[in-house]
Image 1 (cartoon, rainbow, N blue to C red):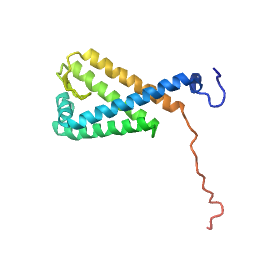
Image 2: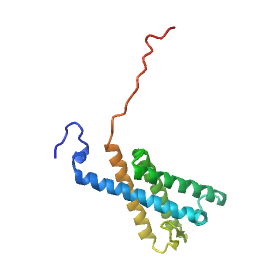
Image 3: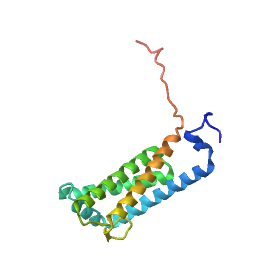
Amino acid sequence: MKRGGPGCTLGGVKNNRHILLLLSVLRFGLGAFFLFTALAKVRHLDETADFLTRSAILPDFFSLPLACIGVAMELVVAVCLLLRFSYRGASVWGAVMSGVFLLLYMQAWARGLELSCNCLGDTHEIVNYPLDTGLRLLLLSAMVLLVWDARSHNAPRKVQHFDFSHADD
């Protein structure tokens, strides 16, 4: 594997087709995951708002608007990841959302709250916080990997320069 040449990224990943294929599969898989969960939450928006209410972090009247914003963000991240549109922004935003969900679960676990989740279209009570928290940590790790992948594909941007040297005073 060639290192240090033009077009080479950290550790020569850009030149390794297998790693690029795995990262593409991960990007597509996470995009599909976010799309599936967002659509499941749209059908049961009241349950998502109820989850936020039982988390007891914000006042109850924030739950429904926050649930709507969260579902909208999941849809945007899903579409952007699937279409590789604004990949860097979508991966960063997906990592932020995953981190927030992880913190929500960790604080609920630490406080001994009983929560249920409708994350995958099936509402279930969370009985194994270590497993649920670990799964969310795995999701966050995968999103951080996509952030790294998006940063390693720094395509040069076209910069338009305006010449005002001949402008009349």
